[in-house]
Image 1 (cartoon, rainbow, N blue to C red):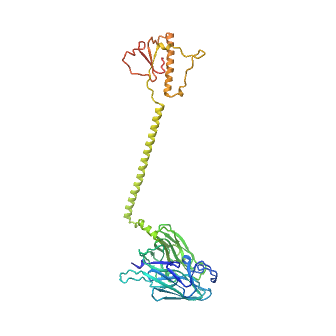
Image 2 (cartoon, rainbow, N blue to C red):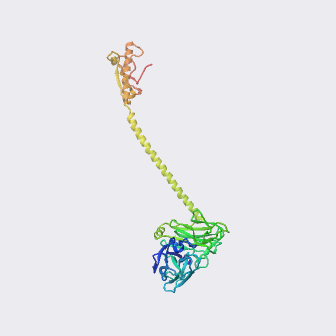
Image 3 (cartoon, rainbow, N blue to C red):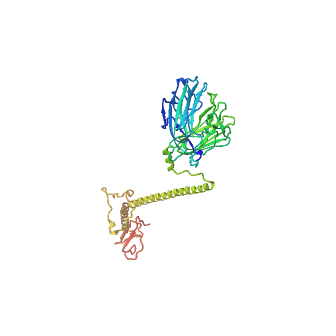
Length: 499
């Protein structure tokens, strides 16, 4: 496993693996201090703000803490040294001892008007390079270590411990769980370089003023740095110089649109270069792999784009398990495979569209047939109720019967027996029309017999058959219907009138 796969882990001062002894006070970066002129650590520092806004403070010699971790022997302790009062010369020392090795002492002297600074290296332990195993396989070793940090020789000063950075090899047996990773910190290497998770384009060099960081810097428009990470947030820290004019740069996450940000010179404490300033902060990303590209797109004579490091929030154990259960992302296809994939995708889309059209047609046919069947049933019921056919009824009349006198009212006049057939049903209408036709034929026959009309002589014994339908019948050969003036039946259709 190459050195490029080593991860730098940030452990905050409140980490459960840190154990304090002696006189320590948990405080914040924005706490006001009277002996600092009423300022805060964040206000008086040109080296960035306190990480996670928590620090452990001590003013007593001999105060110490231990840190148990699993990884390489390389550990860096970061914090803040403050002169108290600010006008005094501050002295002290911080020593780091790894396991049973000899402690490495780091004395310091802070002379006014130097300001206090956050994110300063208090002490370093172990080799800056990865150790390899004894079997000469080239694989780095990883074991349990214990770091002991002691504060001593304090004169007019106080020490604030902020966080620790150590090196860890990714191990399936000890997965990350929301840890903060530091990418691009070139402390101890002497130069910037591209790795598996960070790639610098051309025209980058070593610059900046961060002690031990060897920040990457470029003044060439179009130069970029690309960071690949697996997490939910990323923050880029860089430098701003009061000696340069304003400039611009952009950052882009995945396939989202590039976002522009400004590089502005500081307006206070202009004698110092402001280091480890938060220039880009992208959070609330969906759990998974992401790519950040930061590009210089301003003027070559303006503020250079300087990168100290990136901080990435790794996935929690639950997010990693969810990611493992989800399908792995498909690698970028070649043009040929992309064409095949497009054809396959087109076939899938065509099948879906065809299926939707077919289902729509089937649904339309079913609905149409249901409506047609319902209408058919309604029509049949209506016809059965309103237009039920009436069987043929033959009414036989004898001439002798037509001499009956019509019905008269109490004044001696013929009674009005007419009905409004429009208010009756079909069967009733036919019955009424039949009775009216019968009465009419009686009057005609009476008139003809009384007037002696020779054009229509019925003769005695002739039977009249009145039909309630069309009255048309096929010809009959029987002697029952001989002729109009002979014996037999005379068939008369409804509403029949001779011309």
